Length: 533
Image: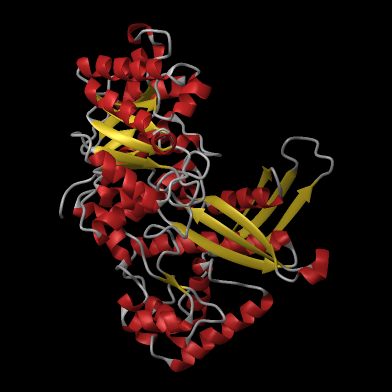
C-alpha cells in the first residue's frame, strides 16, 4: 500500500441523526465494537453534552477493550460571550474521558452572522479559545471546519482564517466539511488541494450526500491530498446521508492501493455493513457498491453465461474479497446456465443433466405464470429447485389455520390466530394475538413450531412487502408477498402468491422457516444425504 488513510466513522453521531434511526446504548456498544474489529481509526460516539444517552455511552464505552479504534467525542466551540471554563459543552467533553475530541466551528460568514448572530472576530476567538483550552489539557483535537466549502466560495479569506486559527490553537487535524452536501468533485479537488498546501497539519474531509456525490467528493479529496476521511459505514445520516465509508474504503484500498483498514479485514466489510443495518433496524440499500446484496447479482442470461466463463467479464472484483457473494437471479430472462448453476449448487452430480434443467425451467415457468417472482426471493427459489431434484423433505405440515378479526377493535391487539401443525406424526396446536392477521399468524405458527425447533427463536421478520400481481382484477387480484428474515447473522428472502393475502403471507412465512431449518440442520449434520433433509 502506498500510505495509510485515517478513517473516522460517525455512524453513532451523525448517523443517529438520520430519519428513523434511534440507537439504544447497547446498540451503540455493539456497533462500536464491530467498527473496532473492522479496523476503523476513529469512532465518533456522539455528543456527551447533547443528551443523557450519549453521556451514559461514554461512561461505559471508555472501558470497552478497543483494539484498533480510538473513541472520539463530538462537540462545538464555546458559546459566544462566555468563557471555555464555564461552558457546559466543553466541560462535558472533558468529563467524557476520551482523549480525542472532534470540535466543530463555523467557517462560513453567513452562519456566523445569521445563525450564531455574533461578529466574525468573536467567532474566530471562540474557535481559538476552545481548541487551545482542550489541547492544553492533553486532548487530541480534530477540528471540523463546518460549512468550509460554502464559506470558501462566498468568503475565501474568512474560511481560511477560521481554519488557520484552529491550527494555530493546536488542532492536530483540519477537516473540511461540506455540511450542506452541495459540492461537486472538481470543486472538492481544487479546494482541498489548495488547503493542503497552506497548512502543515493533516487535512481531512467530511461530505454529505445531498447531491449524491459524497463518495465521489471524498475520492477527489484524497487524490488532492486529504489523508483523513469521515462518513458512516453504510452511508445513512442527516438528510440524504453521509459519505458511504463501505464504498470509499473498498475504492481506496482495492482500486487505489491506499490502505484504510488491515488487509485481512476486507473480507468483513460486507458482513459488518449488514450488521450495522441490522442493529440500526433499517433496510440496507441493496444496491450499495461492494456491500449490497445486489452488488454481484446477475440476471440476464448473457451476463450469467459470461460470469461463469470468466468472472471478470461482468464483475470488477471477486465478491469474496469484501465478504460478499455472487448471486444468479432466475427469471424469464435467465438462461440454462443460470439454472444449471443452481442445480450444481445443490447437487454437483446433476449440474449437466439437461432433463433436470428442463424440469426446473418448466416448474419455474409454471410458478411465474401464477405470479411468483424469484429474483428477490432466492431462498424460496432454492426450495423449489430442491423439490424438483427430490432433494428436500419438509420439516412440518400445516393441518389448518384460522384467523379471527374484529371491527371496531375492542383491544389494542384485535386479531387472533389458531394454527395446527404436524411434525413427524405429532400434532401441535397454538394460538396467538397480533396487531394484524399476518402478525397473529406468524406468532402462532412460531409458537407451535418452537416446541420442535427451538432454533426458530433466533429469527425475526425484518421486512414485509405486498405487490398486486394483476391489478385489473381489483380486490380479487392475486398478491405477491415478499418477506425478509434474519437471525442477526444471515438474511434470506422468501415469496408467496395467492388471491388471499393471508395465504400468500403463510406461504412466504413457511418458506422462511423451512429455509432456516434446512440451513441449520445442514450445518449440524454436514454428512446428511440428499432426500434426508
